[in-house]
Amino acid sequence: VKLHVEVPPLACEDCYKRVIAEFMKQAKVPGFRPGKKVPEDILIGYVGRQNVQKATIESILRRTLSHAMTLVGDIAVLDISATTIDQDESNVKNIPSAESRGLVFYASFNFDTEDGDKVLPGFLDSITGIHRSESKSFPLVFPESKQENLRGVHAQFNVSF
Image (cartoon, rainbow, N blue to C red):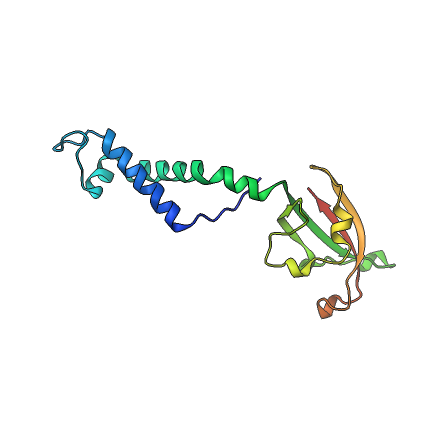
């Protein structure tokens, strides 16, 4: 499961300052007395930039992840493909503008995508009840208000969780 969380800059800065303060307390930097203030650039050079970054990211995650998870709820990742439905099976075509890979779906029935206005009427009802690792196929008709080249097109959707 992929989770996208935006952390306010002030929270990141606070976590960074706490990490630097903790390293300053514990690091025994040559030329400085233990526990005394060491210039930040010297401290980072001594403990290593990657170690400071790693500790800062861990601090940010400890501080924010549990809160973010309570807001996100149950999620699933969908792969969606669509083809036209035609009596002449040799004329079936893919509909690239209706396809999506790795679309995040929330249990509250909201899509986390910039293309949320492209969700077809009946789509959510058609995928409700599908379990993880299942696939489902269903037909839908593009409404008149959607993309001009798809108006009234009968499509077969395949959705995989």
